[in-house]
Amino acid sequence: MATADRTNPQMYIPAEDLYFRLVSTYTNYKLFSRNSPDPQVWHFDGSDYDDQLFSLIYGTSSNKRDGQYAIKGKLSGKVLFSRSADPRVGHIAGDGSYNDK
Image 1 (cartoon, rainbow, N blue to C red):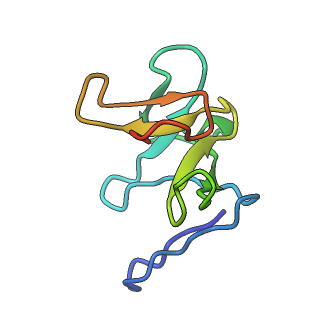
Image 2 (tube, rainbow, N blue to C red):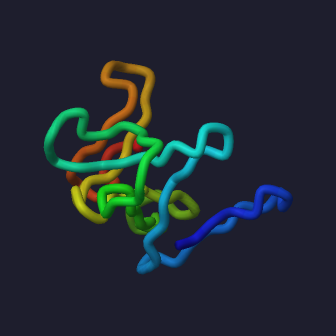
């Protein structure tokens, strides 16, 4: 599992084929992405499960997302999004083909 060094100002960017968990440094809650049951995207403070594993999809110049990354759930196969409209946070199929991811 890839982890960021909290004392280093540079962010670690894992390879595309490496899975990692997104863990709050404040609460230790882990983000999860699953297809069922609801909620499908949320955070959890218990044991480790496969729905907490994510990988990166690297953006490319051909899709005009060079230097950007989509975060894809291993179990759900969907990418996370965050936007100003409701729902503000969630996941969707498409491997990062929309601008609000």
